[in-house]
Each structure stands twice: as structure tokens, then as C-alpha cells.
Length: 149
Image (cartoon, rainbow, N blue to C red; front, side):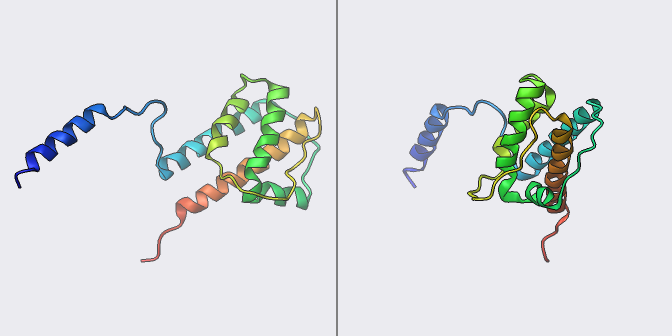
């Protein structure tokens, strides 16, 4: 009992010397999910502003690769490269894709990511919309699941 005041002092001193967190606030899974959904909405709005008249469509193999969770990050790399090269570093789409990147799961896969035809904005547009829809649907599904009580 006698050491209790000393323990309080040590804790107080320790708190004074603890470095303060810097940078972005810590996101809990719920707020992180909302943040990603918000970024996806912004990207889709920007895609709609591009007014791409696309005759491109997805075959079933491409659609499967876009929806596969283990390929989310490799696919994002492809979209980010295309967006940076075609739309520029400062485009809202490029910036938001960069924001999503660290949030996506990192997985090892031997499967190849999607291919985006070079300089084909229509191909990029169709595939990115499908990709973002798959992520959004997955996040919405997780949001609506309830634990068994």
C-alpha cells in the first residue's frame, strides 16, 4: 500500500513522456469501412463525369478476377497505374485510389490481375466501376451481417 503513491507518480511521468500520435486519426473498422465507401462514391461520381461512351464489356473471367478478394490489391495497382498515366497524379480518381490502397488486404496469390487495354479509357471505366462495385458490395454485406445471439 505504501508504494501506491509512487506508482501514481511513475504513471504520471510516463504519460508526460509518451509521444503524441501524429498524422491521420486511428480508424476503427466501422469508420474505415464508411471512409472507403465514401471514397468509392467519389470515384464513381468522377467516372460518371468522364462521359465515356464505352462499347467494352466484361467477360466472366474478368468479372471473377475483379471480384476476387485476393486480387483486390494487385488489381488496384493496375487501376492506379492507368489512372496516374491517363488522368494524372492530381485527379480525384488517382488520389482516392491511393487512399484505398493501404486499407485493402495484402494477400499472396499466383493468379494474374486484370489487364486494362493501353490508352483505352472505356476499358478502364468499365472495369473500375465493376471493381468498385465488388468492394462496395463486400463492405455493405459485412455491414449488414449480425452476430448470432
